[in-house]
Length: 346
Length: 294
Image 1 (cartoon, chains in turn blue, orange):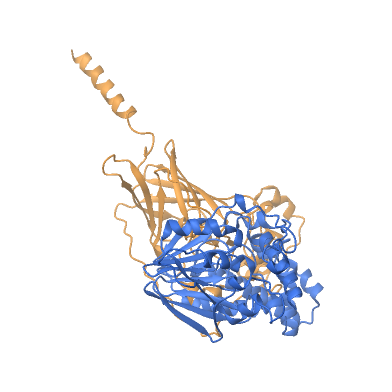
Image 2 (cartoon, one colour; image 1 turned 90 degrees about the vertical axis):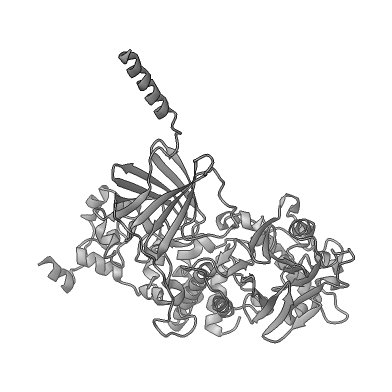
């Protein structure tokens, strides 16, 4: 089981770097598509330091940039998933931790924003480009103000995906695992003078997704449920579904309130890509709902997958959101949606 | 003596004129009323659903437009959208233009435009500042910087939200950028759009709009509140499934043009296309079209 998990996680890492990390925010989807994914394996500690092959991506040339969103919340972009940083008198809270190789640069950028230590790392899901930095960032604070242990918080399926049964080799080292999990609809934290609420989004991008709502700062971190770079990666191997992603996007829209004329107000930090607000999430939700509706209609008409593909069901969106390589091609995306509509299963 | 005074006065006048900065040679300030001599049917009553004629749209844009259902605009989240700057100057509502100056140097820092409908406010930065990074948020009006080319204000806009090029479902992505130009001649401004979208346009879309100075023009507030207009199940997004929207055929039949013309594309804007149309099939006139022809 752990070997299979190792192989799968290595594949996820390969594709995550190919899809997400070039640097993510500084490339257009057209530039990102078609690039061969880099090899990975740096997290397979149980198989030796290099894991399943050396990483081809050169993180040396990747910079981390910070952007103040609003209130206590900042956004870091670079390689891997976006990192959300909440700062204040209580300390620093992160949502996701990007790749391990980016940790030093991430820490350096956090220090420009706040000198306080990290107290919490919240993980939106278990993919390498969002949890890879857990171990290093959790160990980062060594001054006298540092907490005895940084709390890594996530939905319990994240822990299940990162760990392994006793006697098996886990994909991630223990130090990277969540220390605090939840299995109910939400988990609440009060930090830096505001409620920070993790909300489970079942069977969305994966089976362990959380969105994080900073209620006073009025910012939502969406994880990979929402991105501005490509169609969403539906991780069917880890419980992901298109209907779950759409439901999660609708939940995000329930939280967001625009300031005026459908602009500003609640900001949304996507898993990858630029800073957004309600309208950006709305466009993404509309697109996925329309594509899903087309698949539903095709199944109702008794089409096969090939017949459905021949209708070019994503033609109006491909040039902006599609991908010819990486973690999930457009063809694979279409197949997953069709299969889900046809079978009700992933 | 008088002659010398005249020469001195002329030299002084030339010095003052020549000493004016190259920028801000034309003052665009004022309230301007839109002139609809051009494209009135599109800009006022609005284009027919299915009319994409003459626009350099891609196949992707065409499918997107044919999937668009106007009922989408009844969703609360869609109700209060203003026009993006890639469309707003074509719409109804007066336009106010004014400049913000640095009090110490009197140099123009920013030119503001405000269009009444949905309070479309645009900042055109004239101080040479760079555009934001790629990961910054996008807005309806985008981020604009301007410079003078002679008496013409040339504006470059990026960071636009996904918007539209026409009010019948012809969309623009958030990859669109725009160059627009303001020419003032007396009491008239001619505004030229040049819109590029690598996804939905095969070549730049160029449109012009006119405005006349309205000395007693006014701009009213335009608040907007979203409400549930049509009760629906959560998450329903009105759209036409592929093959179910026959609006382009209906438009073509109504005006007795080939459907290929109605469906648009860069070719349909060229005069040569008129010759090609003669070889194409024209759909049978509908009863309403026959009635209109009488």
